[in-house]
Length: 235
Image (cartoon, rainbow, N blue to C red; front, side, top):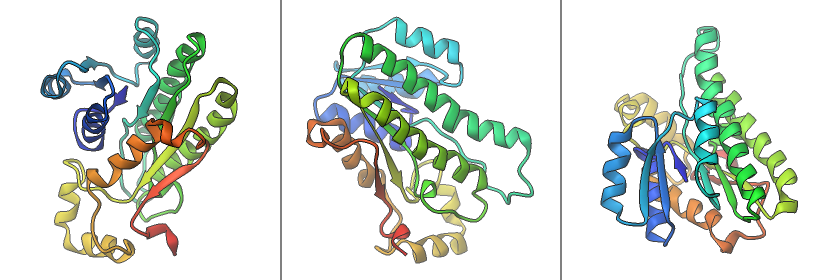
């Protein structure tokens, strides 16, 4: 199951997992994009419209179908602004989706896995901003540092059930959401100055780590983070 699968990293991840042989369920609030994507992927892919911030709907979603053995907790949002400009509404929007929804999606998924004796992998989309800080990112950093701690604690709780929990922490990745940001040449230059490999990331840079954590090749890896940042956090 891939949340936020309509575009960007989520769609690229669903495609890569499908190409690796997984039966993929693409989830997003709007059905249009994911239904088109699932149709393009073929018989081993299906789409399901689900607002992961609706916790009752999340509960029903997992009750009504067999357990998944892989979850990519990818749905997320950001509201970049200086901390003195952030409102309570901004806080709730970012933290509710990035942390609260991610927590309860993982919980519902893990409950079904435990009930059915399924050993598998929970993968949470974090960020380099879950390891360092950045200007105008106080809300996003708060949410992603929370995701990092949450995933580690999940790993301890779930290890006796053979369920792993890890994060992937990318740098700035060019997606439909972030592409307009890079039209600001000063912002782009500042980002490139911190990415030691000298380029903005692409979704292809991230999906390899996702497939790895979904596979048996990572069967002894839990409670950690794969940082895909071109060297940003190495300083």
